[in-house]
Structure formats: C-alpha cells, structure tokens
Image (tube, rainbow, N blue to C red):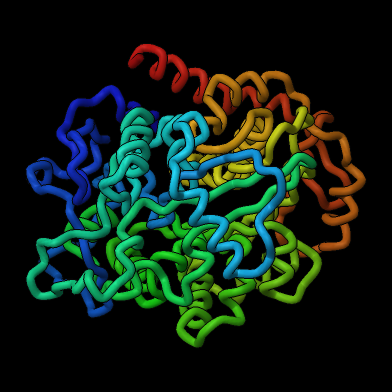
Amino acid sequence: MPLSVPSKTLTHPVLHGPSSFPSISKPPCFNHHLLNRAFACKSLEIAAPSLSLHSNVPPNSKHVDVATLSNLCVDIVLNVPQLPPPSPVQRKAFMDRLAQSPPDEKYWEAGGNCNMAIAAARLGLNCISIGHVGNEIYGKFLSDVLHDEGIGLVGILSNDNSDNIIDRSSSDSGSYDTLLCWVLVDPLQRHGFCSRADFSKEPAFHWMSKLSSEVKIAIENSKVLFCNGYGFDELSPGAILSATEYAVEVGTSIFFDPGPRGKELSTGTPDEQRALNQLLRMSDVILLTSDEAESLTGIEDPILAGQEFLKRGIRTKWVIVKMGSKGSIIITASSIACAPGFKVNVIDTVGCGDSFVAAIAYGFIHNMPLVNTLAIANAVGAATAMGCGAGRNVATLEKVVDLIRSSNISEDDEFWFDILEKNVVSQEITYLSNAMNGKRNHLNLVSFDKVVSEILPRLDLQQTVGNVST
C-alpha cells in the first residue's frame, strides 16, 4: 500500500473550528464538495443520524487516516517548591493562583490527544483532531502547533445550530477556554497534575446533545477514530457513544484506550459504566497497560485478559497490552504476537503511550503483520521516552528509524517465554527475537533482522517524502 503524502505539503483550505484563528492548511481529508464548508461544531446528537449525511462508505474513499476525539489541552510544565496539597479546595486555589499570571510560553506544550495526532502525523498519516480550543492565547498556541504539524482541527462547538441554542450564561464560562493541565515538578522530581477537569462533577460540555454535521463528516471520512478515557472529562457518556455509534455506521474503525480513567469509569455513574462497556464491546482495537487490563477483567495474565476482551467484544479485532519497557502483546481471535521493547536511556515517559497508539494505527491502516506493527510501536514509544515531555517532543521519524536500525531490543526472552508458554492454546503465537527464525515448542520465532528488512524501506520512503516536503 502506498504511503500517504504528509498533509503539510498540501494547500487545501482548512476546515476549522469556531475560533477566530487564521486559516491553516489541512490534510486531503474531505471530498471536494465539502471543502467550502466551515467547520464550526457545537453539539452531539444521540438520535440516529440522517441517512442523507452518509452511506456505506468504502474504505478507499476515506481520505483521513486518523481522527482523534476530544481531549485537546495545553500542558504547562513548572518547577514548584512543593506539590499542591491533597485537599480539592486547596488544590483548586493553588491552580487558580498559577493561572492568574500565564507563565512564559517556553513552559507550554501541546498535550492530551495532540500527542497521538502529532506522533501519527510524523509517521506520515493524515490526521485531524476533533475537539475544542478557546479564543485565548492558549487556544492560539494549540492551533498553531497542530497547524505546524500538518494536523487539521475540527471544532466540536459552534453557534450555527439554531435548534440547539446553548445558554452559556448558565454554564461556567471557563469551560469555553482551552483546557490547561498543570504539570508540576518538585525538587525531588516528583510530578503532580492539576486541571479544571479535576474539580468538576460533570464533563466540561455536559450540555451538548448533538453531533454536528461537520463532525459527522470528519468521522465518516476517517479510517480510524481514536478515543481515550480522558474524553469523558469533556463529553458526556451519551455524546461519546453517539460519536462511536456513528463511526460504526459509516465503517470507521474505533480505537479505544481507557487509560487510568477506565477503572474510575467502571465504578462510576450508570451512564459511565454503560458507555465504557459499550466502547469496549464496539471498538475494533483496544489498548491497555497490563495493570489496566487486570483492573477491568480481574485477570492478571495479560494474554488471558486480552482474550476476555475478545470474548466480550462484538467488533474487537485486536487487543494490545502494553508491558512497559518489557514490550507489548497483540491478541487476536486467531493469533498472538509479542515483541520485546528497545533498550534506551529513558528521560521521560510522558507521551510514550500516546506515541505507541499512533504506530499501532499506522500498522493497522497499512495492514502490516502483527509483529511488525508491534516493533514499530515499541520503537516509537521508546524514541519518545528518550526526549523530555510530549507534544512536539514526541518521537520524530528520524529517531524511530535510527532506533530500529540499532536493533537494540531487550533480551529478556525468559520473561516472555514464561508468559507465552503457559498459554498453550490453538492460536498461532509469534515472538520477535534477536535469534534466527525458527521454532521453540509451539512458538514461532521471527528474527528482528527480518522484520527490520520489511519495515525500514517503508519508513525510509516516508522519511524521503517528508524531507522533500520540507
């Protein structure tokens, strides 16, 4: 399958959100008859969408590779004498004091789902972010970052839908500002996190009741819709389900990473529990850490936990379990693949999981072998860990290629064999190894050199295309 040309080389007009920011170039995401429509979206519709907005869309007509849903924020990383106090009231007062005087822009970074979108765009995928940014300085900053990375922005709020007028005076006006996440570091390098989402009992846009036609078009034209657990901080459970149900209708694959919020949602309100369960059943690809998989299934063994998600799922094709620096596993209905991680000097793990997801989407979209997909994903995650922070600091394609060329993967084979050999099942099990191709009991050993020979030409080509475009 040919590689997508990076969106930053194109000059189509942007389909932008409701802000007053300058127009930016956008990826070749939409049919030409849609290019003159301004993206200014306000509401999420739970009712069945109109048939006139979509049809059975063949995959080759989808011009966006990845759309991320909600969770756009600006991280502000500050050194502080001490971390904020545990009391919610005191923490909010602490955060409000910080917000009174905006810190220098050198401390700002794109965060949330921007991490995944940036990492995916750097791999050559055409990406859009569906979400909200405000009209203040932080929103301008975030919009500019996405533009510079070649990522389209589809606003999730608008004022153009007369049948769903929002009384903003009855809501917290701060909820219309760009979401800030304060990343606080004390002298002992311990981290604390604060955002206004921590102090609200309801999602920021809990009053939204419709999915606008512009957001529907964005979903319809995307191959993958990525959602994570933090999306529940902005959108109601019904709104998130509306978006994912529409994705199912128009043939867009759903990726879901519940993250740390997954455990909270599993014991949350009835609506949150219902939405979480539905997402886990309807997603094509589920991504979790081993701890998260255990917390949602009660099963410690990562492979058995993955198989439990497959049993519960309706559309589930892949379950990916992230094992930290050890590597990762993909469990499907017919096979299991695992790949050890890369040995790197870890500077900062923030954004590693988001970068990893981007590479999984890359392999999924390009129909790559499972073990090759894991190898790239492990490399992208590890390359991000070698830097400091997320956002624009996530892995570059150059760093990923260099890391793969180094072939410096972990040699903790016994750790993996212990996991794999106690799961003697009928499925094919493939393991990425430093050794030659071969067999070990029921395991198929695939040489890392063989995988490198298959994935480097694709990445080298994308690197060449990227260099020409810049």
